[in-house]
Length: 170
Image 1 (spheres, rainbow, N blue to C red):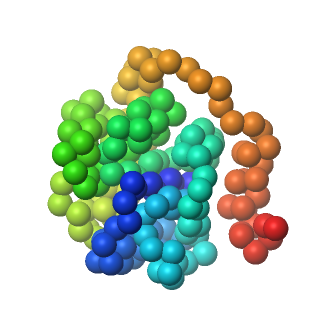
Image 2: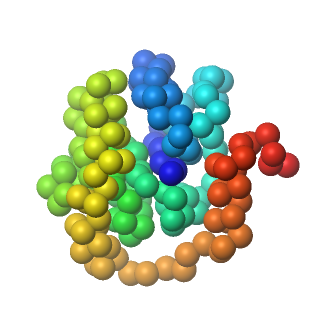
């Protein structure tokens, strides 16, 4: 399984520590971090820091099970389009509004009080009960126009990485 974690802004040191502590509890899950934590922060092998990739390239993967984001409009729309249960950790009013929509429409979880316990419980819920959100995501995704998906080659690259680790990538 893969979980994409994407934020428009770098998290504070405290938030970064909480995030890494929670993700470390899930060693069999591959986490792709986009713009989330400072690149100097040490992370375990199951966390891949990806500065420049395309969000859609990760979300369209079959193995991607969830999408943790800050509730910005593009993340909100992409999460629905690719039918990925979301965990929203807002950093502004737009994130608050979209987080409320995620909660109200049953598309995932809205964390209003960011803590280790809240993030861990939310991630566990989304990973173990994704079917609870899939029906609502399917209904809402039909309202978004379709675009082309990534190539099979990108899928193979990510499958390779999460099966064999980054030491084997060029």
